[in-house]
Amino acid sequence: MSQKIIIAIDGYSSCGKSTLARQLAKELNYIYIDSGAMYRAITLYFLRNHIDWTDEAQVQEALQQIVLEFHPNSNTGQSEMYLNGENVEYVIRDLVIAEKVSEVAAIKEVREFAVHQQQLMGVKKGIVMDGRDIGTTVFPQAELKIFMTADNAIRVERRFKELYAKNPNITIEEVKNNLELRDYIDSHRDVSPLRKADDAVVIDNSDLTPEEQLRLAKELAMKQAIQSY
Ligand code: DC
Image (cartoon, rainbow, N blue to C red; front, side, top):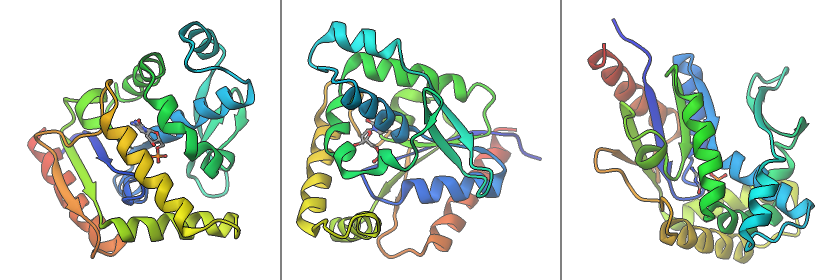
């Protein structure tokens, strides 16, 4: 016997969090939420509307104009990010967004806005959410917390392959610099910085296949779900 639980997956950029979270949610028939997509969509809105995010009043006003939703893609079944009714799943993966998102995600008002919505999504449990502060701030009560790590060179290579498929002009140096900068900003900001929750299980997937990491995470999830019953 088991019951639905909350699974929080945190870690640095390009550690394979979203791959694992998505697969785990599918296996368990849970909802998957990519919390990073929400910060990316907010960044897209700010850039498009020339919001000066160092100005608190402008940020507050802009946030009131933003509606974020996840809807499943009718072909793949995967949930995709919508900003004010527009599917932005593809455009938010661009390096232009990646270069600014950590700055935007460090703003207190932005975090309050996103975290509140994330917490509402978890009310009924049965959710896997990945991000940077899910186990520490969004769901400190999560039954299972996973903190993912991977070797730096492997992370750079993974992100490079992803971005190169869309933009063959991109260089490995650009990707490396962006990852290092984001990791630094994400773990040094004042409001809910990236850190491992004390009760999180660490998974280093440098040498794990996606199947192996999924098996490991699924075992942990089943154990927690049974214990929580
Ligand atoms: O997971 P990602 O790379 O798509 O996240 C994009 C950015 O959003 C990342 O640089 C940090 C920020 N983020 C955050 O601050 N808190 C989260 N829960 C998720 C993402």
